[in-house]
Length: 346
Image (tube, rainbow, N blue to C red; front, side):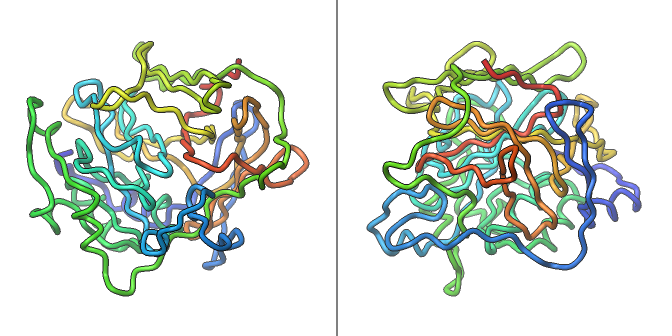
């Protein structure tokens, strides 16, 4: 994304990052404003368990790695991508118009190459802040958003700071052909880097799942008459949710379809940042601090409840209708951030 002029009031509001969250029902929108730096923390994983997946990770060196966030393109022209199937957690954020981007968090696995790597957005700040100073890989941004990145609690391993770790390759044209490697980016970690906290609670072996049985869900990221349509279908044989996008299997460059163990649908409102992309589409920012409706899909079931993130530093919590934390299946989790009313369970 190329630099654009940004009014000072917008920059100040981005830095504050305090806003409301939205639910699946457009009538259920709650706004909260929290001060201070209190955090919401889950218990540290025991023994050899990886913090972001809840799965056994016998390699102590990998358990001790920091989180690495890579911004992976998700525009049709940027597909197929590499790396999202190796990520522990993937957050799907709306960036402009109907286009989404993948905020992909790595810790236990590597992907060489990974990409296409694209620009940072203001939505990323509230996502990186709870991750314990993660490595953050991106391909530039505008001046206003760069100021936010520079102030955020992260280690900048973007193209401008770590250019030897990036190269343009393959048949795609710029900006859709910039790739890096997670192994190279991890080597940029400072010596005192720490692993990320757990983002979700997980069910113990033998613990029954909760919720209502479903076969899948549909999400529509809409902009006028255009939309990015996402579907997940429950596959009992593999115990995963197979993802499609715009009626095609959402597969990486190796032909492997995304099929996470869990899908979290976190309904959020988006605000106009005042920025416009080259096509003049509105550049959006997800409002991630506050509360709103959330649906958690795990083990062929959905639990409908709430999400809560009182501060930028807090780990987002997901609770059922009784206020009890929803436990996920150990494994990979995808978090979708659609606006209120943009998803249907099936």
